[in-house]
Image (tube, rainbow, N blue to C red; front, top):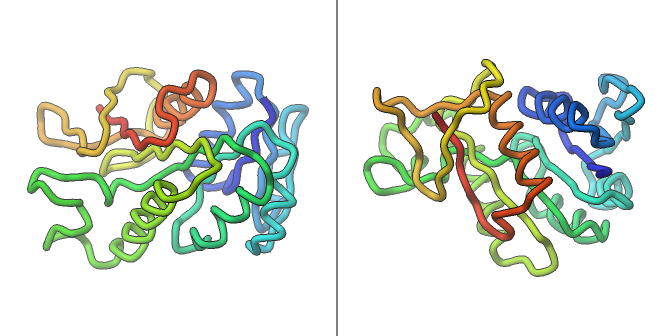
Length: 202
């Protein structure tokens, strides 16, 4: 496939880029600084200034688009219309964990002990999910990581969930960038969650 990857040089985006190219997909890394994209036979770079027209132009002509950017860095009210304008129907989001339902039965970012510095970005991620649910014309999938989304190993061994945060037997909620990238690439190649959110964790 030809995949447009918005945010290809970030922590998650760079792992998604590697996973997709390791599987033979052609990826266009769409970033504000295209000189930072590791160009190769399977990777090209495209710059964007973050406007709707610029994003739509960069995404147009691909088979699918993946966004892997901080929600505060790219307004969902710009991002989603840009993808619609591009004509690309398949859209996958590196989502957030804050909008998952935690042990207290509410969204993580609504719990009183949720870290205040993280809340604005998490709430914006929840808004993006709500916006997609109300948007026609996109075959979207929103993939939420577990609470601890960190560098680690590519094990290929993890669990799937839907709207509730996953915890292991020790009460920890985590997934590596590398294993998350596997889940995203699997969903791209064999869609099972069209117009749905799912989560992955150990």
